[in-house]
Length: 200
Image 1 (cartoon, rainbow, N blue to C red):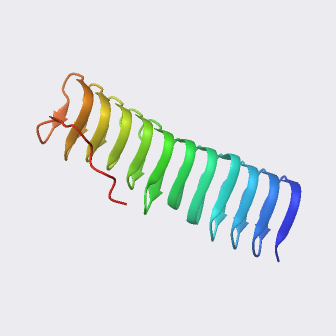
Image 2 (spheres, rainbow, N blue to C red):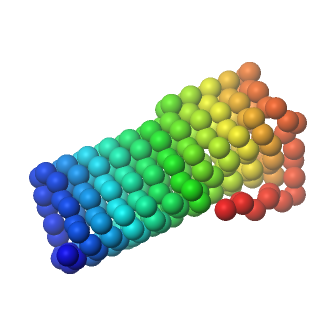
Image 3 (cartoon, rainbow, N blue to C red):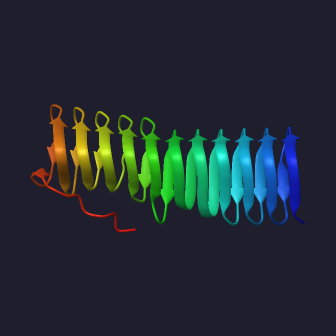
């Protein structure tokens, strides 16, 4: 069964056996969609699970966990806990705990919270990594790596690595590099003319 409508508001849980096209969705508990979902705005207190692709024109807000089997496209994504998708496209993505993508996060602004974890490449204009967070590869115009956080490879026009950061792979920059105290790099940071293209 498909669902089409302008607005759905549910206090508990919503389950859609098929595809959903709704302008606005507000659910206090969980949403399970056994197909794709297309909406202008989605707000979920607990968890969102989509078996196909998810397209949210304006804002996606999830208090707990968001899982999308296919690609997630949205204007603004705010997830309190964890986000899992094949690939993420957004203007802004702010996640408190964990982001896992197979083909990467391709956004304008990306933020992961304190002690957060990112699996999959981050491709963004602005990247802000919280304290004690761990991430893999970052491709950014401007990167701020929080205190005591770690990254695998960093490719940035401007990179600001706060105190106690660790970069285990390459660290390439174009314009500016600022290293705080006790920053560990396992290869010599290199100033380059051009950054490599993301591999995904």
